[in-house]
Amino acid sequence: MAKREQVRPLAPAAERRCSDEEGASKHHKKRSRKCVKCCVFVTAIFVILVTAIIVLRFTVFRVKDPVITMNSVTISKLELSNGTTPKPGVNITLIADVSVKNPNVASFKYSNTTTTLYYDRQIVGEARNGPGHARARRTMRMNVTVDIIPDRIMSNPNLNADMSSGILSMTSYTRVPGRMKIVIVKRNIVVKMTCSMTLNITSQQIQTQKCKRKVDF
Image: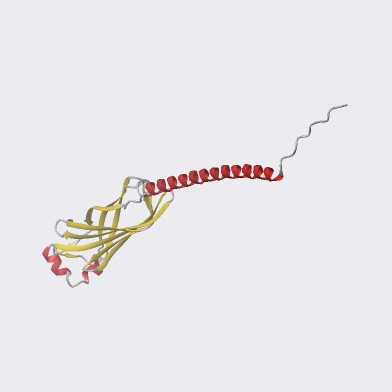
């Protein structure tokens, strides 16, 4: 008589459920650990990038103020009557040697510049220069020519006294609007300079000069 095949009894249903639940729990824990590690890694990368951007923003990419300087001023076409009074109808020319220093790692592009000349708080001359740019970490120089209108300056009641003293006090105001872009940082910049100067009538040269600079963003 053939031997009966041994039949192994099935595990109870409760045990099978416990085993399945343990496997699912272990798998869930593994996935959770992976997600935590991934989140930590992404957060660390984000913090590093933000820190690097902040450091670059305030070091390499920090926009520094362009520096405008009045190097010298000369007077030409000044013709005098009796050695003290400007001849009527003859324009007086003031030539200013102006430099713009750009200390940044990107070029400073500027649009039309204006220079206004004042005598006794009255406008007596104005000049405009075309657009240009100051290269990175370079100094750009330009000559600004201002034609003084004699009729305006001669109509001032204080002119005769100032001319008799041999010294004429004047004020100039220069405005240079421009823009600078350093990678992702863009800035509109306006460089301003106000200069007080005294003109020696005899030598036709600027005797003293004092300038104040201001930069607006």
